[in-house]
Image (cartoon, rainbow, N blue to C red; front, side, top):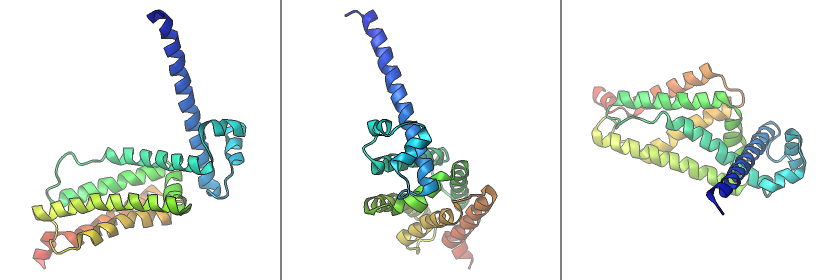
Length: 220
């Protein structure tokens, strides 16, 4: 077969794949809306299909069951959040406590922006996703532990540089810092207000910095 004969087929395949991905995205969006409005256990395939304006058969062409789509929705939501936070990554090594404060605030404010842009993310990830079943709870805990591990490495590096107190319990401090935004999301994530959450981010940064600042220890 000539190259000319293959070209239309490739184009059809690309169009078919693009359409398939679009339908998957539409199902995920519909499921996310239903899960956050009704709750995971109260949502049925029929609710998702009704929101889509389609029958059950289309759903089952893309997903095995409700639990399968929840997994996809959580991964989809996490990917959105991580993409937003990745934009705030530090351009280079953090070498002072002021740089650490600035980075922490920018990271927190970026998370606030993500939550305010689509409150369904916090409702699903924090309020519902972790409590669906044991497997999802374990997945949530692994994500929490991964965040703590990254922060702990930053703290150890900061101790070596000298701007964070050497006497802190790094693991306990990292766990506690990561837990603070989750508590704020649990309290405010259902109806987030940007100004309220931004004020909490800055208050948290002040609290943490005053607690770990090696310079503050020397001044006392």
